[in-house]
Image (cartoon, rainbow, N blue to C red):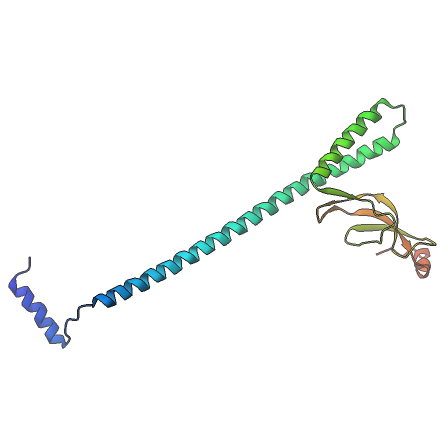
Amino acid sequence: MKGNGDDEKDEDTVEASGLEAVEPRPDDEAEALRREAADLRDQLLRKRAEFENFRRRTEREREQIGQERAAQVLKALIPPIDNLERALAAATEDDPLKQGVGMILKELMGVLESSGVTIEDPVGQPFDPLRHQALAAEPAPGQAEGTVLEVFRKGYVLKDRLLRPALVKVAQGAGDEEGASRGEKVH
């Protein structure tokens, strides 16, 4: 509790400063509270939006990491598939292992297919430097320049992502025959 002397000091201090004690009006308090509530609501909405953007970004990153890992696993299956295909090509018809190797190859190809992998065997198609790698070029009468003539090794694509380019031989135009005879490389 304050004594009477304390009340007089407060009044004297206010009078000495030349200011009158102004009590906030109820309307001013309500307006201040409204502004504060609006600011807090705005901050909340911003934090919600930031969190939603963060959640979406992390979900995209998680999907990309999953796709990257799946592509690595599928890419690792390609060389064994090549070896199984070579084994089948080298086996004679009466070889008892040929059937077993063929079954394994069929299962692996099923795994690739169910995962969205497609095989590129571009014979007769135009050469695409983004999907094919040219190892040789030769003149090919009746073929358009840049047409794939032969596939040395098939290419593999996962959805739109190239896992391995196809190694190909490309038709060379009549004007390019001189360059090939001099040993120039195909680009």
